[in-house]
Length: 74
Image (cartoon, rainbow, N blue to C red):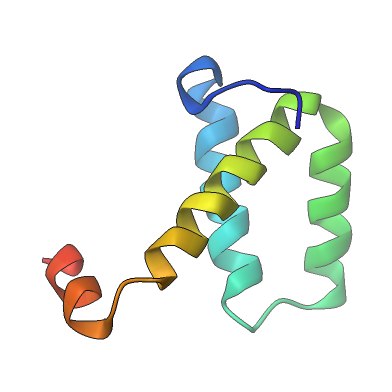
């Protein structure tokens, strides 16, 4: 990671990173999705940083128990 924090990244990079995290984490991603993701990452080092932050956040959310995650949905 290049060391950029979430606040230092463009809204476009952040939004795309979240979309990629959701798509790839859904379990429904196809080979073409992974190829497109690799291409997106290679276009800009900021994309790598944004995805790393989004992935870290998602993994932290998974640590919540189901009741806590349900409260977050509300």
